[in-house]
Image (cartoon, rainbow, N blue to C red):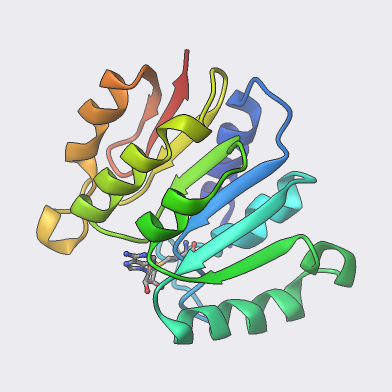
Length: 172
Ligand SMILES: C[S@@+](CC[C@H](N)C(=O)[O-])C[C@H]1O[C@@H](n2cnc3c(N)ncnc32)[C@H](O)[C@@H]1O
């Protein structure tokens, strides 16, 4: 993963005001060899930057498979055990999830799915928690998520970083 991307995840970790016990990463590692500034192996960053349990969720079995392969090669055995894989639609997963989420990362479903995922996770995100939206500079037809930001603001999240592509928010 390139350093700029890793810095982004570090910003999210540093912003979180509550102990980071549970991270939900929507969208598994899809590419074994990501191009610079593209798919960023987010799951690996969450594991390396925290001691949290990281749930990584994807509707595509191939992405789950790739993710497992990449992480088994690039994480220690101990760290690998902190990743929980879920082959499921993001909203379906979150609707039935009952654990408080400290960081929620949106890099899986497109605009509509992200909006629904945010809505159903409302009860799981308490003050001090952090959400991070990726691909906000893309059109909705290419899974751009910028139009979901006002929903998050309505829910009590404040934008703390917006670099056009990613938007980082904290619940106040
Ligand atoms: C951009 S990739 C994720 C990259 C990953 N976060 C990384 O940093 O390497 C997007 C992934 O989201 C998955 N996806 C798309 N729609 C989804 C949905 N509704 N629920 C869960 N996963 C979804 C795709 O199958 C794909 O594997």
